[in-house]
Amino acid sequence: MRPVADVDNLVRICSNTLSNDPKHIKAYFIRASAYMKKGMYEDALQDCEDLINLDPNHAGAFYLRGCANEKLGELDNAIEDFTRVLELDPNHVNAAYARGAC
Image (spheres, helix red, strand yellow):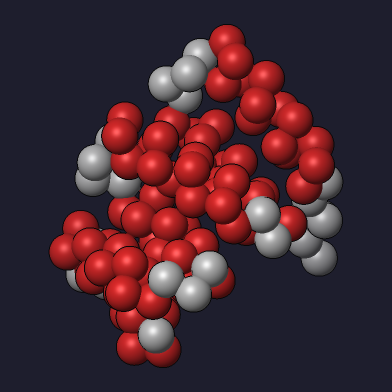
């Protein structure tokens, strides 16, 4: 059985990491994922934007941003994000499914 993540603690740890290293790519990705779990889609979107600015080829950031956009009702933006994921990683099954579901 997989342990349950303390999402609030993940956000806190990543926020502390980013205050010391504002270019820490993994911290942005983990915090964006945690924000998604908490339903904080605007915050997840912002972290994805920051991450994409640091690494414009980060497929995971585009995927999370697509998920956030979908939850926020921004379906055209979500489709663009999922399409970009598939350009970067043609085997990303979740992005292919999510793009088709939009």
